[in-house]
Amino acid sequence: MDTHQKENKMNKSRLQEIIKEEITAFLNEDKDWMQKAFSKNKGGLHKALGVPEGEDIPVSKMADALRAGGKKEKMARAAVNANPDKYGSIKDVGVEKKK
Image 1 (tube, helix red, strand yellow):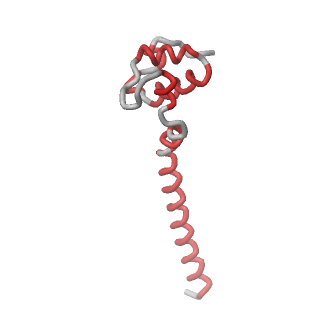
Image 2 (tube, rainbow, N blue to C red):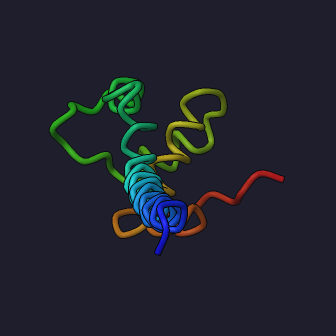
Image 3 (cartoon, rainbow, N blue to C red):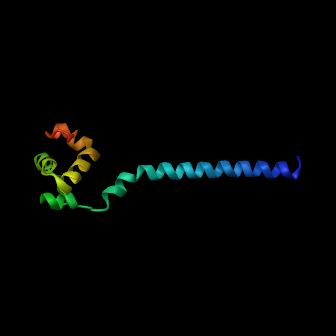
């Protein structure tokens, strides 16, 4: 094997390493997107609904927030969509999706 072939082989293996690293980094970032999105205004929905931060938001207050409109509604819709185990879907809370 001449020098040129060895360099190509090393470059190819290094390129494969770089691709694997980039894919791994991308997949890890994808997992944290929701946490990053919700950390910008931590406790904002609790404050808007008058519920202390340590307590769960009752479904009835969440349904009222979903009907309220504006920023409160956006935060409530995001919370319902992010917590399907807790609230189910928006229809389960008793509010139809807007058209």
